[in-house]
Figure: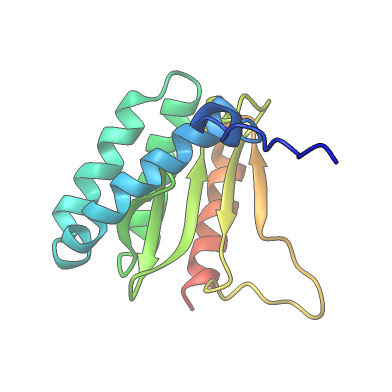
Length: 154
């Protein structure tokens, strides 16, 4: 009876073939963030510095939208602490992310996203939206963002 030969061990590249380059980059960024997270929890300025650095790395139109979203969130929910989360600007309360901005360029999508996690107080009945596509900001959209953020922290 012939013996079965086992296949050689897979390389790291083969094992991670299920993830895109963007997903692998996001995982690496998250690992780095976990190290900085403890610092940001103790120091609001450190968290804000990290967020502003991420925004500065963005190209337009994401850069302009992220900057304005940051201004709206910090003005309307000063109790939220800026920090990064999976490479994105995010805003947390008691160490838990309430809302975040995801640039369109991050995953090569056609729009940026303003998202809210389960810690946001946006509940309306049995179903409600938790993320919003952003193509551009204008006075009407900015007012909606401000209202959502205020409701999220209420």
